[in-house]
Image (tube, rainbow, N blue to C red; front, side, top):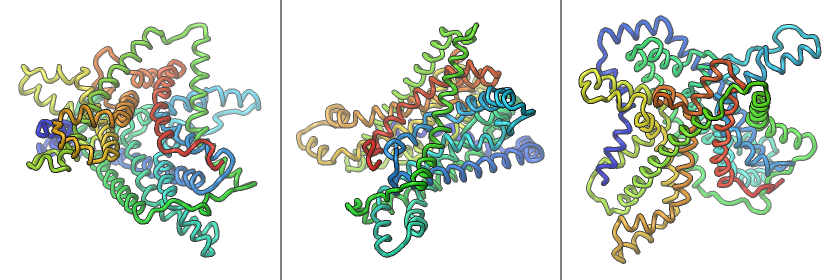
Length: 545
């Protein structure tokens, strides 16, 4: 069983191996393609991706750190609400934000048109949203919760207690913030920013809709527009290296964060409470916390709802509801199958790892290697996964056409589910492993003493105790699969579009009002794990308000 699980984990690593393996067949033609890319598009891809990454890193750091400091270290009106409300932008994919803000703020949009009519102004009132810096702003609004969540947790562990000690030693408020809180939060900020950058580099929807020349959009142009598998593989491998470096940075920061939290962490005493703000300071804290919630969730969600209402009450509703039901069912079916498969795999792996740690499995196996490889999947962009699947399929199809590899993995649910498992199995495994940490090992020892076999131990003892973790894992994978755009665009079954693909295609055709319905459906589904997360990590509503 462990060998089968190990082989399955390694099979899920085949897309990454295919991308890296493309360099082993590096010949004169591949060198010519690389030289041509270096002379034409590679510099533009690298520069635009760099500016995008730098802007997003600075923005999420500033916004996530400021909101986390305000909520964790100070008391002000509405603090209890902002604790969970600051997580709401996680439910709003960046490409959905792009559709909403483009419709609202473009030259021909209602806002600029109304202002020009009311005040007699002429021309464009602000730069076009569809630009590099517009993309930076949208990514910051949708991804800052990564920094906020990790930083708030880090500050909540020890900061109140340590800042109270610094206050007793005579340090002023600014000095306490600069010398105690910010150094303590540094690993969390780095880890959150690295996660945000991985999401940014993996994005395709915003980059393609705004016409940006990033590595991800370049991969699709090379494969789909120029039909150049070699160029696509080269670009995908470069992006993979960058993502691997970010993943290493994030894991190093996470390890430092766990180490700092484990050393002598103590809950704050009654005297070590968040400092109450009054007057202008309290108003500033409310503004700092309210602005990202309004811009990152409330206003775009409201605008999408208004767009849908205008479209639905117009003379002709351009989006047939029966087609919407078909798209919603296709999305639900694919996401449900991915969630079920990923959760089942995570439960099996979690149980096998637990047995191995207990010494029940003393024979050497590949399971730890397979799990480590599987854990990298979530960091791999969907574009890389899609190319990594299509490369070996095209190679096998060219040499052994009778096997029908293309018919099995190209334009089929099987190929798309395989891509979902590559990307999202790590999410399910993390949730299951977290659940296993709350199951005492003494339960397993007692069961073995009573003669309970391993299969019965898992089914009758572990599974009931892991039910909440398993449901959380399935929910997270379900929502991630519903929002996934790059891999779905390439690998989806023919004639079976998902909500994410439909919203992207409608927005690309400038049918933004019609794109509001599938976009709102994606946001509504995305709210489910955000509510679960807010309930898990948040304090009681209104605490300290």
